[in-house]
Image (cartoon, rainbow, N blue to C red; front, side):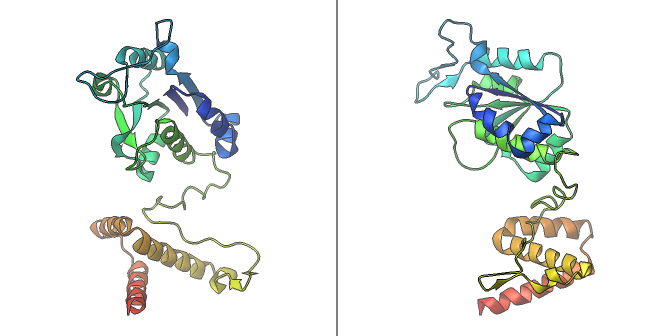
Length: 255
């Protein structure tokens, strides 16, 4: 997969892209990330990329001519979608990451200052994405989030083929708790079921903990998961039984 990043601060990408999973993925040619400096497409001697907003107001706006030259140079005749990272965009979710992972190419446009000239957003941007309801200095950190989340879903990037499949959000639920050696640490023991070797009981425990954790920490995700299962008539008897157990347990805890 090829990912092009348009940014005013290319140096922000050097470290993260050369480290850990992303670094190995590039060495193995599973992803190819190209970072472009938008300032290189300014044509005046001072390489100015922004200007004051029409109508007045605080801050500066990225100039449309500079940004469009950058987009057109990078995109050329390719069909890669241009994704603009902005707090005004649609929420970036695991399902959106999976959708992006199906693409052969992506172009990520990092905003800065007060944002982007609206004409660019309307005519050269295919989709706008936000990583949360807060404001950052620019789109560089969101772009790294998108690159990381998408790359994990590309076959061969993760060392274990199951790692991405069982990540939080992959099936709409938060992931179950994890434990490792030693079996007891400062009087805190690993749940006995995980040491039992009984695979079906372990699977049931993990499902139960995943459901409980999602219900208590992210009820919005739980409601969406339950509605989708009920709509598709995919809620199993085992899941229904576990849900009843959890509801009874939580009811006792509230007393």
